[in-house]
Length: 157
Image (cartoon, rainbow, N blue to C red; front, side, top):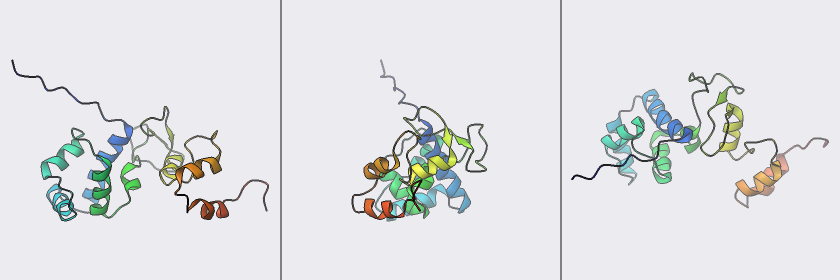
């Protein structure tokens, strides 16, 4: 009896955003899957054209090294690929207050601006977390003092 191929864990909202954004950015630049594959090969990150197709179809996962290399190959930040492009209704995000599906591991949709700030390590996903605590955890230690210098806290002049 042949072994049945077990389906992997389905993509969450972050995986869906990445696969959608790879295709969106690639199409906007007029880059084929074959060309993206060639660019990745030149960066020593081999993903064959079929692999690109599978990523965009959601049947192949992107690991963090793939994500970084694909971002380099497309000339964007990894945050660009991680940021949801569709709102919770399934249409393009039109503004900062549009709700996006959120991120894998977060239980509810968030505003597009909140998601973008979180991806850039500027703010936590929720309003309950202290911003200074978040920045201290999220930023490289050498950057924390620089960022804290430019934050304006309520009540300060």
